[in-house]
Length: 66
Image 1 (cartoon, one colour):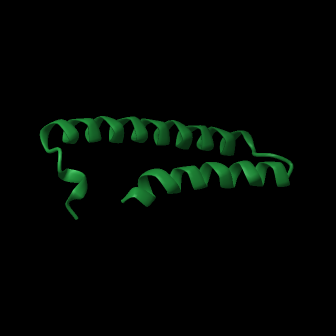
Image 2: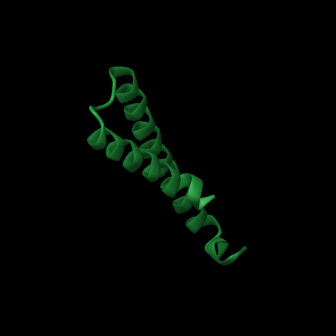
């Protein structure tokens, strides 16, 4: 779960940045898609942060459960 939320979006961002530097650059459509992915990743991070804050208040021991 943590991989999908944190690692995968960052990997995508870094991957496409590396490709852009290695090649001639992204097309306009690819750049737009990448910006959309970045925006969605940032929104997901904010939502996760909010959910964790709620869980910390309502169930302080939730992080220790597995």
